[in-house]
Length: 340
Image 1: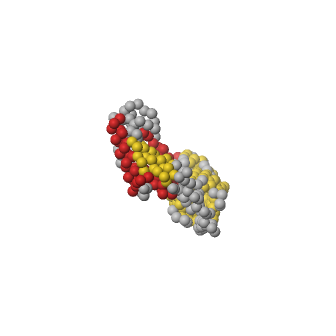
Image 2 (image 1 turned 180 degrees about the vertical axis):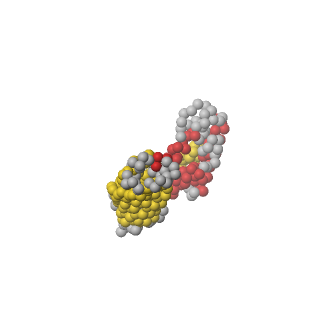
Image 3 (image 1 turned 90 degrees about the vertical axis):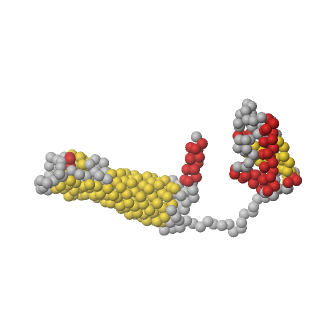
């Protein structure tokens, strides 16, 4: 559970990491790979049937504009090609699709101020789909149709610099069908609407730069330190009296507080859990109080202001049965007293 919490916190920090929050015009380009679902071909001189496509490369170029409200508009042209094999698996025939689409998309960036920015969008445009097929008996198709097309996209933008963003993107594309006439014979036919699933890897280059931060004419006044009695708690590992890095940070904050205020005295109480003998725990709690005192002195707190007490296991922060190991009871409490 602890590891999952830490992983979730780490992911939140990464996603919230500051980016460049680009606005204004940009150009974009990408390459990728795409798949076409099985497509039906009708009335090809008795050779009606499905064609099964192989995945193939995709290429995209475009330009867009990013607005301050996290929306973008983007115009791009994308080329798609797929070899679709024999119609109805009648060998040794062959066929293929070529699609070129010019699309205008509206896109929303969900975390543009961060370095990692998921986005989603919808697009509409025009495309032309060409269908080619041939058979040894002389039947051939080489015809195209154009019409309205649609697309949906999901992606992740990653800021690489103040002007360059890398994109990892998925697109679902819905294009036109193709009506054709076979030669020889003049027999009409058609295909299903051309659809494609595409994964693209691209780059965006933003022509504008992030606005420079506006500094105030006069620097703000630094608020005065509020001095009052302040407690600090330093925790120790089981049966140990040496300082962890976390404990050193706590003591450093205590020393900073002492140096900022008119300190009258510093009280340190050492404590232990109930996992050992009571007499041993008194000595252990004293060692813990002394190591905290020595660190405070090293950081500049006058030794004559510091007093220590060894409380052993007599004042636990958490009540436990005898013999229990309790991390919250293995501690040294530091109280800094200041002039009232």
